[in-house]
Image (cartoon, rainbow, N blue to C red; front, top):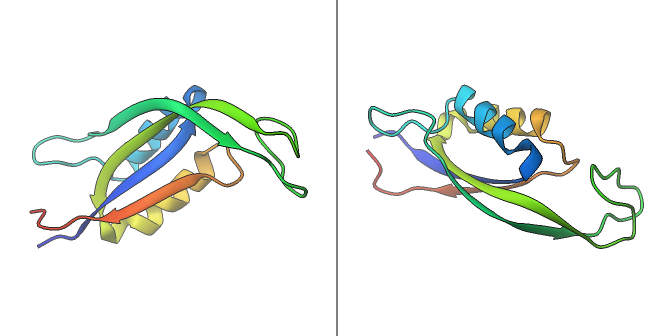
Length: 107
């Protein structure tokens, strides 16, 4: 049985289409006879860049609220390192927020 993980990445809405494309090109989103499968929820990301940060949005020391999308997709665990590197390379944030969850009983 192949081991799958669910990847969740938070991205500014302005860059969501790019990250969807990067995820699909990295091998994410294959479910049965479909590819490029994902789910998106819109919301707001909140953060305060600290001294030494180089923020894409906002200013050091100032609390920010940014329209973002939560993108969820699946991929084989064996592709995880490649996918995470592609996210890091293409995500506009200095420190992208990415969650990875193991999936059970996926065939």
